[in-house]
Length: 84
Image 1 (cartoon, one colour):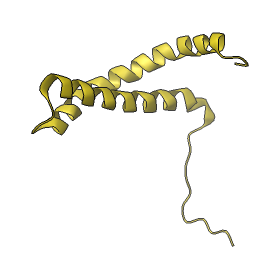
Image 2 (tube, one colour):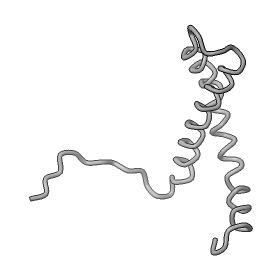
Image 3 (cartoon, one colour):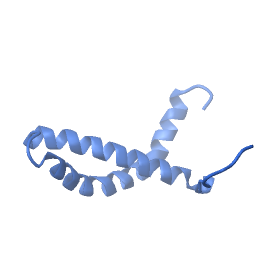
Image 4 (cartoon, helix red, strand yellow):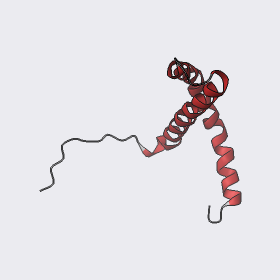
């Protein structure tokens, strides 16, 4: 017997580029915020709050940038990868 305890809602397929850009931007902006804050001010008291402050600026900018460069990257991938 297959009982489903919860239903997972998914976005329609046409939102794939935006979901990809959002997740890529979010992860990369957080990682870069961690590295840049550590390089500039060190890893000591208040580090996480400084990272989160930097992230609030970096995330929207990264999202817009990923949306803008994605078509260029896809074109370059098609030039470099066989069968694309």
